[in-house]
Length: 460
Image 1 (cartoon, rainbow, N blue to C red):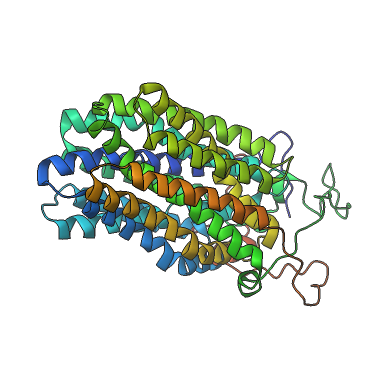
Image 2: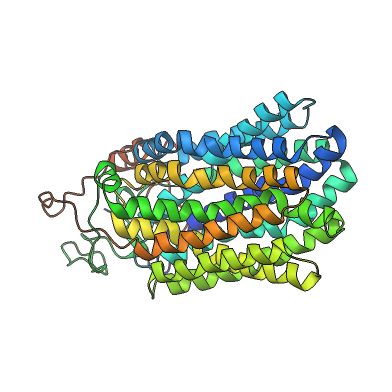
């Protein structure tokens, strides 16, 4: 293998940057903007909160249903292929969404957008980062995840476009931006570092010494985690407890994404512009949480940090449920934003620490079947109870109690013992051979990856 030139940026950080950009697109155009679309769709069509919540829940059901398949595809074909397809579907979905006129077309186009965001978003990005980092994994995941929070900072611009241009033109232009920016970002992604002569965290290749001499001793990364197969992982108690805890957190996250803007505009009399400032405050604290959580997660107990975050989710949602003043809404934004920011990237880091990286995509996809039940149920519980009672107070209170229960799941979700099987011989990674890696390892090419002296595969 050809070694990296001194002073070059480790290519894993380029992958983090591309993941950041993709998360910005998905966060700004869809997840943080959806609450504002809900307000305008209710005004134009008179649709109920339950119907609009059901669309979001149905879209999240996509992740639960397709998650295991998507995880397997990512492990075997590499994240780049999935992200390219996802960005194409995501952008076209927004363009079609701009033409809807009935609940059926709304459901169909929103489902298409959600499929695109899933294929091009969290799971394949996370798989790539988990494989390119070990010691600095929590930090790398946090930096990439900040993109979703930055998307929230851009939500005021999306809301300004919604008020000035209307929701149809805003949706169509969002699709154009997604295609123009998302497809190039997808090209940066790589699955594993080894086919490119790299090692996790940018450590020198095992067969290269400083100055280019071969046969040097490898740089130690610390104890390597045992790689579980997907079947071995799902048979552990930790898999189920972490998945249930993650689902408890997503109950709150999804309910806030769908209903928070409606809640503060209808109950507290906020304008869309004022509601966007709440989104911005939540986003700023989420970014602070990402940065501090990434730093702390590489140094302290990830599980202990997450337990505290779940309590923060519960307390923040209780504040929002009973809010009667601006300071209570601000308190909710700070608590929820910090809890979301710190906890979010640690979900993937905990799974990678517990189960290794060889089948990480498949394991994460299987876990999403359970975790996404929270993403589905959160908006539905809040929306149905709000339609029946005329207020979000009871729905938000129930979800806060379930979030607190999530802290118990994480408290008992300890690292599982290694699987009961013979250890693989030294040097036998047992990794599934993705097509991307097969190309890279079998082709000598003079083209270079940005920031690296290692050749890329030709089919990029």
